[in-house]
Image (cartoon, helix red, strand yellow):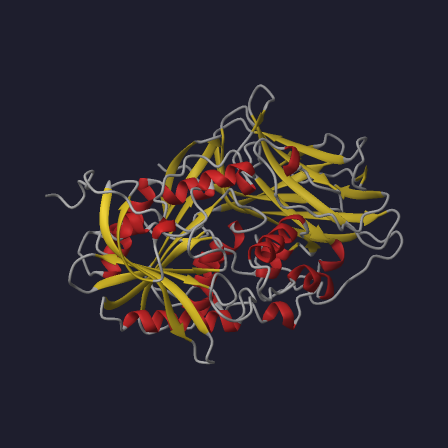
Length: 564
């Protein structure tokens, strides 16, 4: 009988009916019907400091040694799905179909075990029934992950090859542990994961992110009320600059040498987008591939198409199956046209080598973006305090007379001053409008459906550039000291606008928005809640932007030449 035909004659085992120890279960899978397999629940593993972590192991119900697919997080190794429970928070998640044994953001054992892989689910220190205290993304957590990889590699059911897979937190822990190069680790699939906690999550351009940060901590403390969970919200207040607290959680991405299939998204700005691209770009791995989509996070991860891609990658690097994986384009990305409409393009590297970075100069008089430098100096002022409804932003429009693909990082150079205070928080948005003047909405952070093309942020006192890491198209800030403004001082700033890809057809427009508060209020968005937010801004009174003449304010856009 074909192993993938399933066994409708067998009664499925519900996760609640499993016990600690060895379980012979029947799992109703999303793709292969009822499947018999072995589940070892609450397997203890002693760490080098004596603390015991617990893991669940799912493996084929037959003799043999198999590669292990592994993930680690602090959510709950024993459950959480079906994902329908999350629709109370995010009602527009999309279509997500998994087995009941699939923990949050984790690989589905109902897919991997029938394909002759062992799946190992690790409860991070201080979560589920693992001992210890929960301190996310620390060297201790990374060391634990390293130890479990090496434990799995020598088990009687493992052939010595271990691969890592998973979304978000489960990708972030992959960056950390892969940089330690465990001997049994042979390949990783980090699927949308922050790699620079300070710049990409807790501070956006130096502005503290307060909404998602708070809800994440509430989630962990609410789930494990009897455990010690680090208070990172308080730490964020105590460590506003990039000091040793954040450096302890940084990873040297260039230490990663293992083969990697990286999935990034244009749709998780404010959390994962930047870090996933940086992970791919900075890793030293000779064998690395990048897949980029502009759709919803979990829906895309669990699509059958995505699963088959993950399997093909692991089959090659964990099983040694010659399946022409090496012919896969190194970079494949979706060029978005509108909501869930786009096409796949390919490249050999990221950023794309053929990119023509083009300056669109801010014309203050016409409130437009133009390719020629602007001669006339103009000062534009807007009300910067949150809650303002009159004159609360500035908009500059570029309308194209040809089809243009913009793919990559944008940069905004501005000359600015604050009217009533010594600092200012700047929020930047990039939007697309069709030829009839209607905004083109796109999927965005936390599954909202009325998102924009891209985002950027800057607290002006954080404007000092890291000249060693910055490039002509990507400013990287030091975040090591505050450069406050003096009264009437006009300063130049460079703002990183996060990676994106958009197709502008002839007659369509790109619109730059500059504001003193959120451009998209996720709480009021379609399907939105628990989005990112910045409730601790420094803004008072008005901000001024200067354009033209000696004030060379411009938007740098990444134009991809047409293929002949």
